[in-house]
Length: 88
Length: 471
Image 1 (cartoon, rainbow over the protein chains, first blue to last red):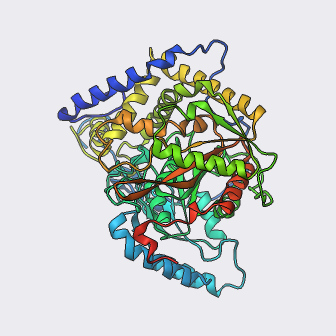
Image 2: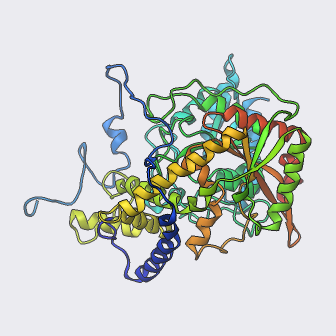
Image 3: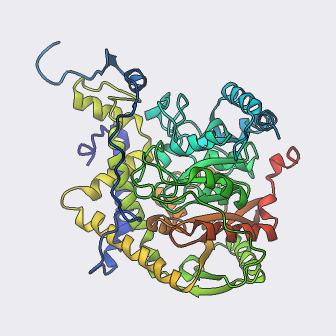
């Protein structure tokens, strides 16, 4: 589950997390008791409506503002470790 | 009162009390002073002229900290301002600080903040509740007349109850979520903490209304308060039996029963009824909320903002190392749980089933509102508990929300108002009365709360710490 969630967990934290996880899931097993036959899943409490706006350009964030919190910036780009090819 | 005078009062109280309480992560005294001076010079005054307020650290104010109480976003400064905050500023209110909170709004005590626990102004050894811990404590200590918080499963109402203030969660969609950093997108509501329902109404009138920047905001006109009611004659108040179990904490039961007597004395008719799906609400809530959280928190990957830890040097390794190290324990638990209930093979049994149970919970409420106008219940199963008391038991912490999550799943408006105190170890601990209404009947819920507060004094009581210094 941790790798699916892209979480590298510190070794020492794993036993406690696993224990909590088991305890929480087993406490929630009661969910299976309720007869949900014929009930539509409710994913949002309000009725969905189409949202459109006037087809007109509006100003968004400037590159500098959008990049201001970047851990690593190169020019107007967010920089990340190299994914393709060999050494840069 | 001039904006400058109101600001001076707020800053003075922050100076006096916040070292002990720890409600605020940042105070922008200079920015607020400039704004207050500008407002006082202006000829036209907005609806909230000069009112100082603080904002929970998961709402954006351009240039200010929006850390969500997490190491993951330590030092993060918002590039734009949330719609609700902007509307307040446009009406003359003055943002003066950023309030502490449980990390990413995960918690019911304030203790999950990466930046230290906020303390309850009524008893500094106790938790203020959460996750809007700083917002509630700041209002309780009268540092500010109101604060914004967010309520996903009770995060405005529960700390309001534990801190003895009024806390309001509007109907889902009544206040724009634009600029509120997402936790559970189908549950999140921007809420208001203040010292009275009347003040909540003044703030709600400003921040509510459709917003094209939030596709889930309801296409409705802004909230308008209902006319004042001098009594509650003709009002039918439902008492859900599931919210008053036989083993309800006596410290909560006693003030609650007094409050119900007060409602009766004001002319309301009290009707016991059942919301049978209530016992499944905690499980359904924590499945839905963690599923949505695991999805929303996928964005914290070390690329665009926040922490970055190199890990093994690969891109995937950087994602995992950053997330594993920068999220706190409760965030890790919720991401893992949410990932699990959404994963192939478990989706139907957990997530889909929880959504069906959510439908059943909504139907319970809808059936109840065929019979009654509002529901009354406790807000929290206990008064403020001691810091550290529940921290090692996540399930015990989840159960703090047992009385607030059903309304969140159904998207309904609900308020917590102070209804008395329980005495323990020589200190008084506030207790909250929760009033719940049908969807979009925000004005009804607030007008009942206003009528109750006009007839009672509980909301005026001050924590001993500040009672001497605040008129």
